[in-house]
Amino acid sequence: MPRCQNPRCRTDYPPGTFKCINPFCQCLLPEAVVAGRYRIETLLGLGGMGAVYRASDTFEMQQVAFKVISATSGNMDTAIAIERFRREARYAYQLHHKNIVPVLNFGQDGNLLYLVMPLITGGTLKALLKAEQPYRCNSCSSTTYRSPGYQTLEPAHSPG
Image 1 (cartoon, rainbow, N blue to C red):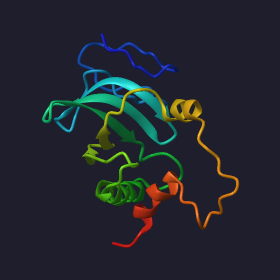
Image 2 (cartoon, helix red, strand yellow):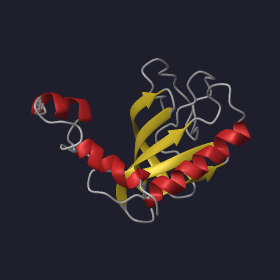
Image 3 (cartoon, one colour):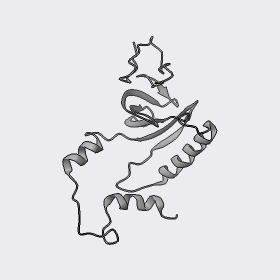
């Protein structure tokens, strides 16, 4: 029996149900298949823009991070939100940098907008940064010191 994995919901559903019907949740349930290719395994995280799942790519036979974007949040018209998602997903798909998690695929399946990225295991970025305690350079000026964060943003904002 599938169960919604959202800690605030946890509703049980009959076999064959693939999406939580709670209007405040609407999570994908385990074993749901999206775009005929991505089988949902478990919920990894929730946020204001949507949810991230561990999924199996049944074409490539690999584990991926499957991010579902909500097009109905805020005051924006749904058609505008979908077009903005497509435009930003195309740009993200074209970015290639060692500090940027690449977008492997993106699309729309019915009302569902999604991004597919490699699944990176080993904890959260927050925990990693806390453990590493990044070096602060008080004597460096912003014009002479380029942090890895800056180097990551540079390809995204450079022409071409």
